[in-house]
Amino acid sequence: MIWFKAIKDINVIKLVLNIKQSPVTEYFDVFKGIWKHEIECEIHLRDNTTPAVHPARKITLALKQRLKNELERLESFNIIEKVSELTDWVNAMVMVEKKEGDIRLCIDLVDLKKVIIRPHYPFPVFQDAVAELDSAVAFSRLDARSDYWILPLST
Image 1 (tube, rainbow, N blue to C red):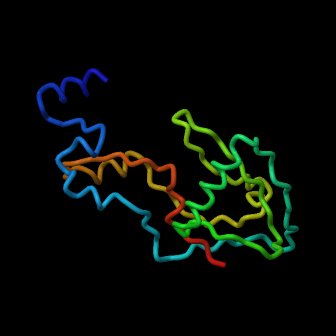
Image 2: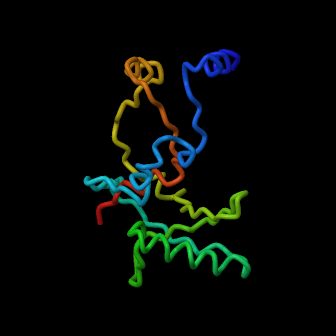
């Protein structure tokens, strides 16, 4: 990364580690909330699949209130919805405590992954994607921890 330090030192690029420290703070409201794609994602399953039902994983008493708060927060953003009727598929939720103290909720989709029919979509090669950036003047890195929240699932 010697080249990076060199081009930074001669002011070819400017490294902005936090959007609050950058000149774009007047547009900070653009980065709030959760954007959702207009097209719903439909999951196709192989014929004659047997749905799987997994029991809930154990959550320590110390984390239960934080879990409840996170579930309510996700429900308020319309990321998840409460289901009170019986369903064919029940996947175990996994709760991970991050270094900062936040929690991340994941779903263990091990059985569902085995029966999904995946679309054949060629992902772009890194070199091809970089070649398209030849006239770009600004770059940013966004936290992709919630990247699948933008894809609503069809029901």
